[in-house]
Amino acid sequence: MDYRKLLGKVESAVLPYFGGGTVDAPSRRLRLTAPVEPGWWRFEVKGRQATAREPASAQGLDALPRVRGHLWGTRLVREGAVAEPLALMPEEEPPRLSPVTARRWHDGTLLFEGVEFEGEAEEAARRALEEDRPLGEARGVGASLRAAFGFTVLESASRGTGIPFAPVETRARVLDVAEGGREEAERCLRRLADERGRFLRQQAEQEARWDAEAREAAQALTARERAAVEARWEAAARATARTLETWERQGVTSGGRRRAEAEVGAWAERALDKAGARLISHRRLGEGLLEVVYAFMGERFVTVVESATLRVRDAGVCLAGADARVTLESLPSVLKEAIDTGELVITRHA
Image (cartoon, rainbow, N blue to C red; front, side):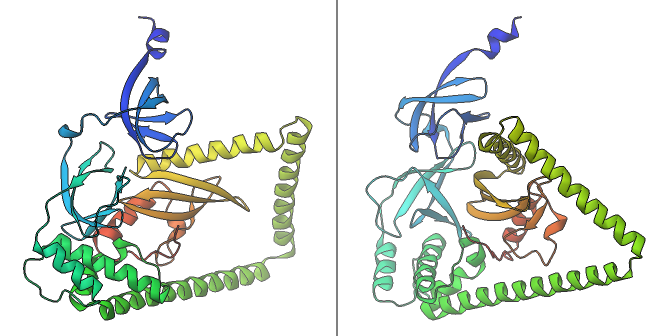
């Protein structure tokens, strides 16, 4: 068999594109040769690369699992107070708190399908929002509608207080918010802000202790040991200077550096892909650090890692000072545990 012919085989596939540098086929993730507008496209697939050729109509949705819930913004809120983003929303925005259905694509993304028939409960919930009163123990209001109502009240309170939140941070309290209204929403947000503040203070105290320990250790060094440490720092600085000199001499200026950064981005993307997360963007911060924005379990996270190792410097969530013990690849499993136990607190927002 001539494997070169097999690798060069070109196929056609109609797939939904949600943005970013990849598109998901039923059995594999493909890299886009050039980005296009989100939507359904007919792709030309060659190996692991896909090229969008023309817009297309949706195909194969009937075979996908259907998910029901209520609309909050561009999210579907289902039982368990899980609020998942909806992809490829229609141009005409459905009324808030509408009962909606979606289909789950092969990568887990929810594709908007349509609006279902409403009952009296949806209209009663909308009136409660308009009159700024809680649902209380109103009858006939199901769990997903009650949770969507609670998230809507939290969103309004967030604008008023200036305290940001993510649905996964407030999932455990959102039904209390639906029952208690704006007052309970503000209490929930302030509790969240207090938890973030406490974590940041602990983080600052820990860094201060580490600095103090480092100074004590430096003072305890003998003259010979200090000279050895300084020599290592100087050698590292000379190595960096030689690398930059070589780049300039070989004509590898900004373009070459961008290629190196692209390789780091691809490495980060592979690490996240293994963990079930999707890279959204990344940017160099200097001092060997990389800021990575990614989606996981329906939320966006911002994490700072070391470019050379992908070791986490700032997870962007409360990890009780254990950031350096995890890598970009292992962090999503930690996030999942925090989400499942209702203990997630986000400190860096996208």
